[in-house]
Length: 147
Image (tube, rainbow, N blue to C red):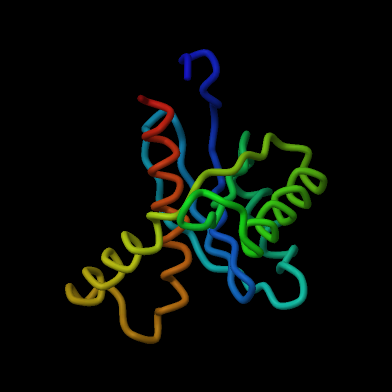
């Protein structure tokens, strides 16, 4: 992607799930990402929590991890994630894009295990795994922009 096409400002990334949505933030100025938090998602996303994050970070871009099947095909979850992305775009009128997250779960699990082993997280902090997954998705997306 040409430098001029790289979005400026903050990017909020969402690891969509039916029970929880992990959220991370990053930017192209530093090419890094950090996990933020996990918001509830029962019948509907916790829009108040997402509204707060969007107001706080004022992102230029929203990124949603796309849980594709092993061959890159759409799944029920990827279709639900795309719908969530459409809702984000409609609600916030921000650039919203999707990125293949197939490899993020394994990496997020490894990072979470390392954080637990170092004493940084406890077993009860398992809900943070979704935020770490969002961070991994965002890091991979940022890396793809640099290629």
